[in-house]
Amino acid sequence: MMLEKPIVDIKIEEDKNLGAGRWLTLHELTFKDPSGQERRWELCRRARRTPIPANSTTSVDAVDVIAVIKGPLEETASKSTPTHVVLVVQYRPAVKAFTVEFPSGLIDPNEEPAEAALRELAEETGFSQKAGHKIQVLKTSVPIAYEPGLTDSCSCAVLIEIEMDEKELFNSDSRQAKPEDDEWSLQVIMMPLKDLLQGLQDLQTSAGGPSKLVLDSRLYLWAIGREMSA
Image (cartoon, rainbow, N blue to C red; front, side, top):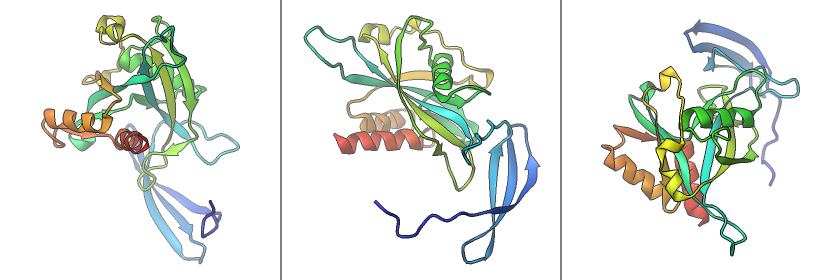
């Protein structure tokens, strides 16, 4: 498929720092559109940024971990179908509510996205290869934008498969999460993949509605995509 208009190079003529906090900085960009008109745009950046690779214009700051659970392979079956997805619920001050979302986190210096995904999965949920769980990285996405109208932060989505029977899955003693101090509110939930979209909406309602529990946009769109492809 081709675009109606070609992608053109846009040069940023000025990148002005407007202020900084502990975790974020505010900037104003000045550039010219193809007609020559000067334009300005404000954005926020992470104060701690992963260096931009030499062959790219995009810095990947974080990973989103899509971890699905499948049962052990039956002797008579050639393929086991995933049954659950691992999610986290935590308080997000920016929206003044709790959110349900994929496990996620920042990439450490000199760390590959897949390595960061396995580390974050272990820290936030307790699922870990070191703990003896059967975990496999299936796919790592290209850099994807979080909210390009607000920030230049990009992430990689990492698809991970965990093999575990249902009895072990809901045994919290088999998982030892080690969340960071600012993740004081974090709790882990295993949502059934069957009717996931409805399950998320029911969870939101049972928690008191959208003023209490907000559905993360990436998770919500993933659930819609699953429903549409069923």
